[in-house]
Image (cartoon, rainbow, N blue to C red; front, side):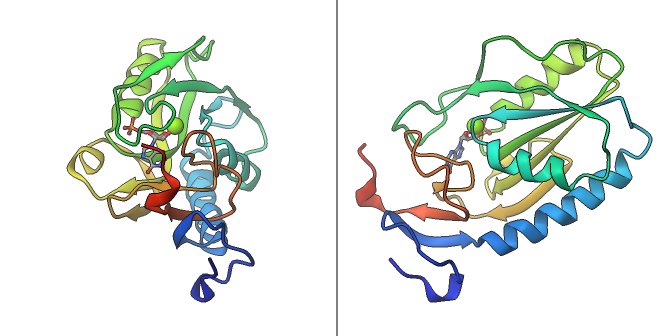
Amino acid sequence: MQDGKAHEDRIHEDVERVLVPSAAIAARVRALATMLGEDYSHADGRLTVVPVMTGSLLFAADLVRALPQRHLRIQLTTVSSYGGTATASRGSSVVGALPKHLAGHHVLIVDDILDSGGTLRLLRKEFEDRGAADVRACVLLRKRIPSALGTPCEYVGFDIDDEFVVGYGLDYDDLYRNLPYVGTLRKDARRS
Ligand code: IMP
Ligand code: MG
């Protein structure tokens, strides 16, 4: 499907509507990085960025390259909430080992989207319990629903309506993560 307004070259046929075009994402990533650069100006050498896999893969990669801090650690974590073709949250759990040596570090959790809030609440508590100097969160997207708006999150890229979205890291059954924009998925592209 072609969406003239979105100015994307080729829109995937399973995408109904482009919600956040790639140029808007790039501009917002730069603005967030500037903000983070100021807020963490005291943390050089003691900043640990924790991208939540796999959804924040693209966002985190772009964000850390735009940060003015050149001396930081990146420690991945994986949290499972949706599985496969489900599009409603089933609770969060950490998969595999949690990041290590966080004591005294300023921890920045980077996630793709804030929905039920389960992921951020879980990770924030884990990192605080591990002695982090402070823990903040940065998400690309936040749904305009009470559970998301009521979950503490210091940095938000875009507030969006409560729709299931894919692209720029976000998946449906591990597909569509590579799309350079965020868009809604056509109903007939879902298998459940
Ligand atoms: P929370 O723990 O419910 O806040 O959910 C966060 C995780 O659920 C995100 O990191 C995503 O992996 C997934 N998720 C929530 N909403 C969407 C969506 O609209 N599209 C794709 N994944 C989503
Ligand atoms: Mg995720």
